[in-house]
Amino acid sequence: MKNSRIAIVGGGPAGLMAAEVLSRAGGVQVDLFDAMPSAARKFLLAGRGGLNLTHSEPFEHFAARFGSRSSQVERWLSRFGPDQVRGWASGLGIETFVGSSGRVFPRDMKAAPLLRSWIHRLRSAGVRFHMRHRWLGWSEGDGGRHVLRFGAADGETVFEADAVLLALGGASWPRLGSDGTWVDILQRRGVDIAPLQPANCGFDVERWTPHFIERFAGQPFKSVAIAFEDRQGHRFERKGEFVVTATGIEGSLVYAVSSLLRDEIAAAGEATLWLDLLPDKSTAQVLAAVSHPRGARSLGSHLKGRLGLEGIKSAVLYEVLGSQAVHSPETLAATIKHLPIRLVAPRPIDEAISTAGGVRLEGLDDRLMCRNLPGLYVAGEMLDWEAPTGGYLLTACVASAVMAADGILAEG
Image (cartoon, rainbow, N blue to C red):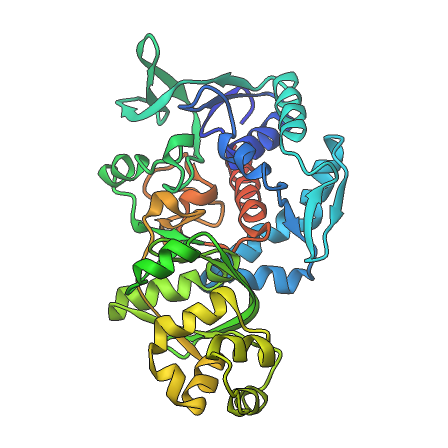
């Protein structure tokens, strides 16, 4: 690819990492385009919560986190995985540490210093940034080159490239540039795309009562466990916490099982999540406590005194059981350990943390080039895969970009 012009469309982590690999090769002019006024806005917003870069768990466990796409993603990670992410950050002068959960963060828990250093290094390497350039598709080219159209502040412009790498993100952060408008452009060129769906998202419940919403919307369920099994027998069980919303539930514990819940709702119209309010106590222990004579005490006082059950945990029992909770200790104990929450819909994609669906990997070669559009590569969240929270998404996004950039260089 000596003396070639490479266009990268998308200025998030995947686009920036592809620019880094390509610019290091030498003899290649790299031009990066993005619709926003500045690069990596979603990356910066994520950094407000501490910027979870990757995860420290063993590689084989890390690579298994990507569901049906684990075998493909493992290939990317073998080229650029969690250890390489930490080394890359160190090269930018950013020290990292492993938190108690195994997640890896910058020592100062900030995204901005890393991003400033990264962009400075890319500019020094000759990468040219074209901000406020919204990709509109292709013009007719010749000689196998790609002629790209962009909407810019001073009108439409074109850019001719020998190869193009698209890293436009999903559709879950439209105000930060990830709006999914690339779907129609690529479908018109014959690229096979799986429908975009919310990932790591919240869900609407069948119904919360107005009283429950008024008192508890925004409050967390802490020290609980959830269980779910779909029609295919995929089972999920985990302790943690999540939050009640005005329409349903969201939060880290819900996000961890969101792909199974979303797909079950799509297939069956609903999904029932089972909540254990006291995961550290057995059903027999709970039954003994609720069966103990309570005298003149109210049921709420009895549950608080015998089990420490109060507030939102006590209130959700009445949401499910109503007056039955007063009359049946067996039903009450069973529900404390196995409380059903009926979910009817995922929240809209623009509220989700990330996106599932995208350019199907079956339409790409091993280097992530479109089989029917030679010279067009795709990386990052645009691809048809998904990841849980915990640094997995960011790591696999940049890993796919390294794979695609390697493919561009190998093509030459």
